[in-house]
Image (cartoon, rainbow, N blue to C red; front, side, top):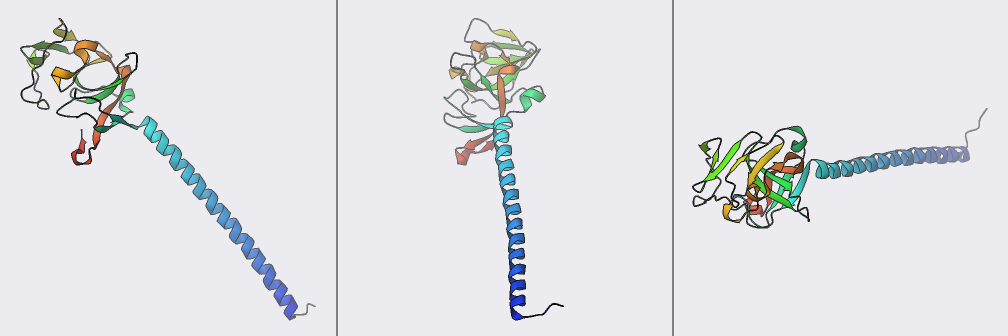
Length: 198
């Protein structure tokens, strides 16, 4: 038969305190582990999101004025190039394939099968004058090389800068392979007062 003494009660209390303390520590470690895993997953997802879904690009030069200006920051969506065909008027970022592998920002004017003609200061798409509301009203589009007619091959797009007098585009580079497209521009994020979704 156990005898209940103050010493026994004190020891039992200490035992219970130690047991509760160990349980508390175990729960705390479990919570810390869960938080660490969550934070780690969030970082991995954020990096993957940035590298494989969206990426930031800087506009360098005036070739896309008045739509985009030198030093504008844009976000491009990177999944589309692998999933769908591109549309006319989309603004894309692509590898120029020059020696520095510069990225260019231009607007799609023609897709596979389209016939592009540049004459009388305007662009004609499949025989009809192309309506280009995004251009400055005084814009004149001139061919840069002797070629004035282009047929866009399968797997390619024809691109022009919105600032036609100051743009290295398909008039010089020829049609752009879809494989070289890095993404299409979805939003301008800087300057902040000129944020715009495309």
